[in-house]
Amino acid sequence: QVQLVESGGGLVQAGGSLRLSCVASGSTASINVMGWYRQAPGKQRELVANIGSAGTNYADSVKDRFTVSRDNAKNAVFLQMNGLKPEDTAVYYCNAVRLSRLGRRYDYWGQGTQVTVSS
Image (cartoon, rainbow, N blue to C red; front, side):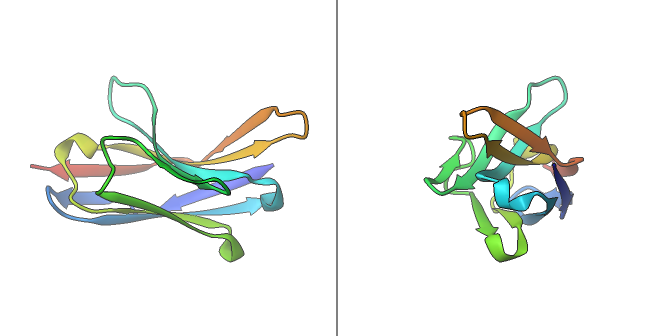
């Protein structure tokens, strides 16, 4: 099992910045990919960015504004968010993915942290 704890959300004005952090504990050696998803009211949860051995992946809406990074020694993943827009308002969830030897995917989730961007 993997446990994820996020921090760093809050209220910021449009154009501002926030940095989200997520620390993993438990069976961290089994993690293949870490990243961030978000869910706005009335919308489905969507991938924001993730990072693994193959590199990084970003949603089109956040490219050139957000940067995902990982510190494997600390079992942590970060999301630097610059140029925030009101449409970035959502609950942000840390995600860790483990792939079994048979290719089965296991997803682990943090409790979520609220990001609110005022106009």
